[in-house]
Image (cartoon, rainbow, N blue to C red; front, side, top):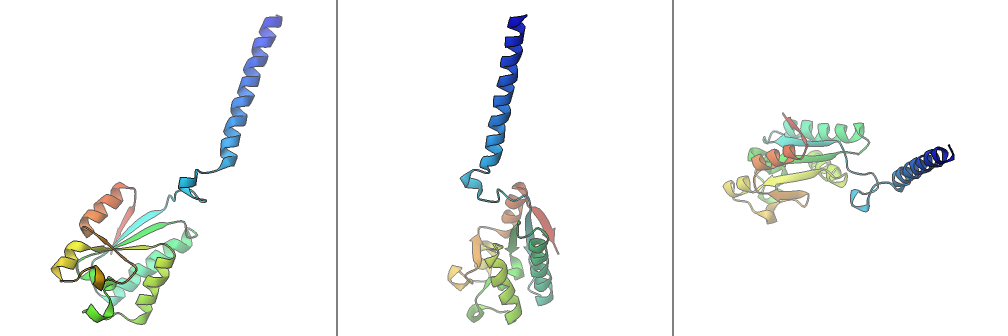
Length: 160
């Protein structure tokens, strides 16, 4: 009988140690690679493939709404290709001149971590290079490929 009590007591103590270890890991928080907030669950990619200012304002507004709704806990990419590439081209080389409001929105969203990807295939077609892009733009091989890869990484795809 004494042996059975000792065995039960060891099992109980072992269980307590396991629970304490799990609790310590939970208190320690995310690994340094994940950052303070951990990885975001809210990932969105917008297709921006038109040069119409109203269309662009709608997409930029929608990105801002997502950031607000998720308390800035969202990874947002705006994939610019086709005629949408002009959003990311400096004024001196730009065929479309967007108003100050649109460009301020791009700058503001960028400060909140929104990424603006510029399709290199479109850039070749319209004869612009990286030096013609605004500082917020990040060249990627292809806008279409970018959409596929980001969706494979769990990004929700939003097209207008």
